[in-house]
Length: 340
Image: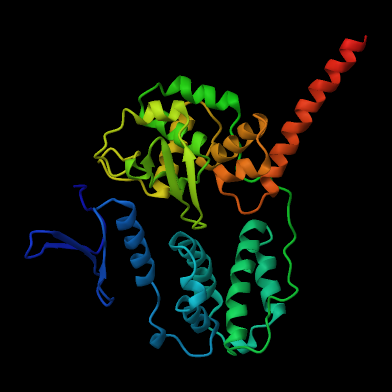
């Protein structure tokens, strides 16, 4: 059984000799943690309970403020419909806003105030865009509940700066990484899991033998809730064959416990740096590389999406168009050469 090293986890053996686990934070309701410690069910329940425990006590927040509305939003059906990892990300953004700007009356919060806040974030357009998106959700909720009469986010836009986002890994990057970290290493396994499944770090760290059957990996994406089935690539299957069946996940820390998404990202970036890759070489860059390679292999947009699980096909379409342009260009020059 994996060692428990998580805050607020209590355990005891019941009268039948079965070990039971609970999340118990002072002042919060006790929550049952199902499954074995470190398993997908256990970690998802723990994360959901930990996020829920951070909701401020509404009794200590003045009614009618933006802060009180955000707290009410955390208790809504709209919020509960979000995946735990999404809640965690959204909460970080909204709580920063709530603590800094949420003390005044919500009815007095106008579009001009929001524009001032966003203008202060001019050097961080991505953060400004994320805040605006999250506040749109809150304000839509507030108008529907008649907490406010009008939506102060209506018509507000953040100027977009052209960005390629996460740096995509090239084939040369992958070769350098493989040369540094040979077969059988934890780093090479991480590389193949990212490259041959095309999944996000939050999904890769939860993968284990419990997700594999008849050479097919079953993944329910934490961010979207989409269920995927992905046949295992031979190179990935060979790397996995060396992993113990008893481990709680394919990738575990030096202490034998599953990685957190952030912990894994930090560790993997360090592996890439030691392999001589640029500092921007992140796990997500391999998700891009996976989509690119599928496009270059002639896969259609929908075929690629069946692996990556993208809801929006715009990014994938860029890869398929680029790959198609490359193939057409080679064919065109070949035809010109044959004619001369």
